[in-house]
Image (cartoon, rainbow, N blue to C red; front, side, top):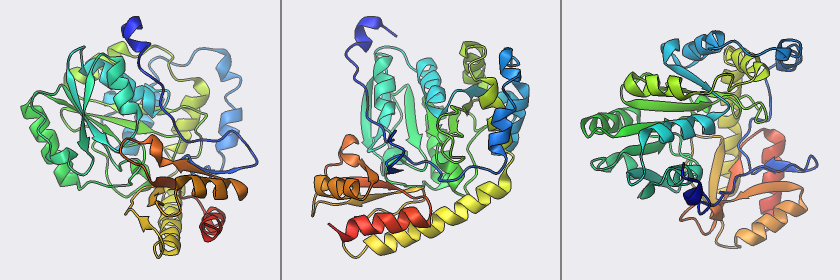
Length: 336
């Protein structure tokens, strides 16, 4: 990165409240954690008095099983965003162009700009039909944030083939794919997959994730990755969580149930976008975003102001969690 250039690249807003008295539905975090995970975390204290194993092979092996890929293709990172930054850093050079979906995770545009690259925005519904020619990088968020769109696997694979033909690297952010039954694209030639463990397992502060890459990108990412870039506590906790298949299955069932309850409760008054993710995007032009956010605050609930996403002027995003969260959200909207 050029230190003069990055001064002009602003920060981006994310969800999340640090007020423990608020039901925070502005961040898409699982309301529950796997049984036994706290003990695993606490038991790492003595091990944390030394450096983590380098490379962290046990973590890579667990990740390989988790997404069904070669463990040698796994690049451990402190969260999904670190995987995204590393991939973008290695895929583009100043003056390149990158295909970026919109509305989508705002950090994509920021990260490419930090590398001296101007994003070429494409509507998220059209990204898989876009021409990757003349672009060094294309980004797909699956399911897309904030819309919840889950793209057909065959369409992403067809787009990946076109990217390979045009020598365009494809970055697929699967931060929320674990909430679905869909198999990962990890190991697909010419594709880097970014995964986050913190959302599905309800542990955003742990900062555990990984990338999966192939070919020259795999070699470059492994070479560029900082040693000891993931703490012993995060490695142990992440390894444990990735083995909790029963927890993942229960989470998926609960999210499907509560997402449908929320859709049913809001659908008569508001336009609710179809979603396969643990959140819903809701258009609230009447009564307006500010009115909805104020009513939510009065109920002790934080919702995401979706005006922070490019192209959205009249929307809020609501995290789907559990029965209590759904009930309190519906109470908010009953008052607006």
